Every structure is written in structure tokens, then in C-alpha cells.
Image (cartoon, rainbow, N blue to C red; front, side):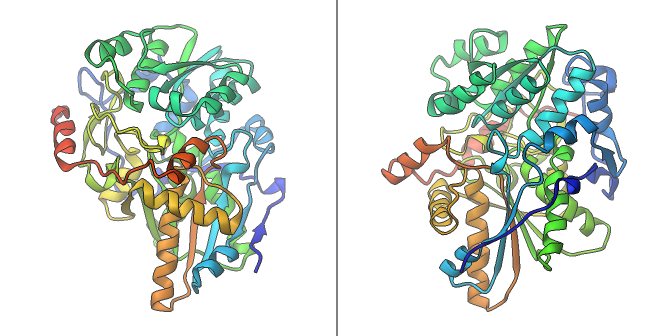
Length: 453
């Protein structure tokens, strides 16, 4: 039984992004200044972002128009295909109907260009000539490097050191797009030097890399900062995924009972799920929505919902989110894109209000699922995407046990062809089923800021 592919014509690329802030019962908690701890205004963000992105960050309009030049570039890979995974269903002997949206067809191999392109566009329109950013697995750095090339801009990427060493081909892709890639922590910034002075062998973290990238942007007149997840405008850009999927599921004459996405900072999860969660919030539907994270970085499942800094050096605003503490340095497990200490404020709010569920998997379980999926469907997922695959398989097996025929939809957010060292290590038995200890979580949370909000 072959899998089924559902495609859309280019004319079906969404003309607007969906902004979930329009449908929240309660407004998102205010963002606070890292020094004064008072609510920030647009001027406080102007050193890092163009005004159009700042407006999107706080917008409560349900639809935000996608600029024509951005839609033109989206045509390079959008609409992305939706598949009915019939071969996987057969392998699992399940009555469940399994669907996956495949974002690995983008030029850089993941969902990240969905926001990299508009971020580069808005910065170019504002007269900015250079963007700086951080990257974990390298998917975001690759996407922003590509987007900067499209708009004739320079790009500087601080790559978490453990991923810099693990993923030389991802680094090579960024450099081929013209980016300057630096392992983080580095001695090129004050925040990087501070970490290395205390921990010379530091393997880095996304929090540290963010500090370095933000420091460069804040001290350079011609440079802005771009973030690949977490922030509201980033999650909004990604909703092209879910909006397209709704059209494709209609073409399949089906709709999901269960939606699944892997979560690190929250962007691909939001991209797939937010348009559906919006229907839940408006009382139109009752989908079950599951966020899946690594047991080695259990932000939603073990981190409290609290105000915290977005980076290690406390240069970024303070936001309310599920967090493991800004000093959290994760172990060097292979899902590099899921190693951030915090979860997107909007995803965190939905979880705290009970609109979404959260589960955590160890990396042995997720790599086993990724290989099982590849052998059935022919696509080797990125290590991050394996978390969604594992949850989808578990839900399909639950349907087998109960005899229910539910529709399970997940976002396959990228391919694993730049992550083969991770699969080599798994197949050689070198990976361990690491779970972040409760006592380490408690230590990491000891530095949470005291705020009155």
C-alpha cells in the first residue's frame, strides 16, 4: 500500500499569516526590560528589530498580510506536500490514519525559511545591511544565511559549539551562502569571553549564543538581530504550514483528531498547530494537540511557567515562559534544535491554560522511531522531527490497542541528511537515554529574576 501525496497549486500559498493573539482569552503577559523589569515599549526593541516586526510582535490582528516579495520567494518551495503515511500505517498494523506535512523540501531542508525570508525582507526594507543570529542544529542559521543572500545582506551566525563540531556539513552550507560562522561561546564578544573564563571547555548553549548575537547587534549601527523561534512574530510567520495543511486535509476529505509537533523554542509546533488551536479557542473544534520535547531539555514538562531572561548574559527582555533557567547548559544530545532553555511565550501560555498537552522522549526512543519511519516512508527525519514521529507512532499504536480509527497529523519539520553523525552514533550504540535530573533543574532555576508583574 503506497503512501498518498496531497499537493496544492502555487496560488494556494496563504496571502496572510494567522496571529493566534487575536483568539487568546487573556492577553499575553507583558514583556519586561532586563534592567528595569518594567514593561518594554517599541523603542526598547528598535536596536534589534525593524519596526514592522515589532508591530507584529504585539499585534492582535487575526491576519497579517504576507508581502508580495516574500510570497514570491515562498514559491521556491511552497506549498509543501502533505502525505498520508499508508506504508507506516501498514507497518504498525494500525487503524489510525497518519498524515505528515513535510517541510524538508525547502532549499535549506527545514521549516526555518518560512520566517527567515520575511525577517530578512523587513530588515532590508528598513535599510539594515547585516543580520546576526545564533543557531543550534544549524537549520536556522542555514535558513537565515540563504535569506540574507536573497536580499543582498551580510549574515553572522554564532553556532552552539557542540553542534559546530557535530555538524560540519551544516556549517559548510551556511558558509556556502556567504555567512560567517563562529563557534559559541567565543572570544569575539564580552559575553562569550565571560563564559570561557569561567568554563574554558564549555560546549555552549542557545542561551549563550543568543547573548553573543544580541551583543553584536546592540553595539553595531548597521546590524540587527534575527531569531529563529520563540518570539511571537516568528511563530506567526510559520503558520503558513498549518494554513496550507488545512486545505490539504480538506482535499483528503479528512481532518485531524490529534495534532503533534516537536518543540524546542516552539516555531514548527506553532506553525502546524496554531491555526488548528485557533479553531479550538473560538469554540469551533476540539482537536487534541500534543507538544513533544526531549527528556534531556524538558522545558514544558519540568520547567515552571515563570518570568525569565531569554539569554545567558541577560541582555534580552524578560518574558513569561516555561523555563529551565537562563543558566541552563544542556548535555550534548543530538537534537540540537531542541536545546533552548525556554519555550515560546505563546506556546507556554497555551500549555499553562490547558489548551495543549506536553510529553518528553529520550533520544534512543526518538532515533528508533525515526529509523522506523524512514524504512516505511523513505524520508530520514531530522533528529528534532523524530520526537514528533515517536509520538505519532505511539498514538497510532494506542489506536491499534483500542480499535479506534483516528486521524493523526504531525509536522515533519526537516530532513536528517545533514545529521548523519547522529544516526551513525545511534546505530553504533553510542547514544544514551539521558533525562535531565530534577536536581539540575532546581539548580538552573535558582537564578530566575524577581519581578512584580
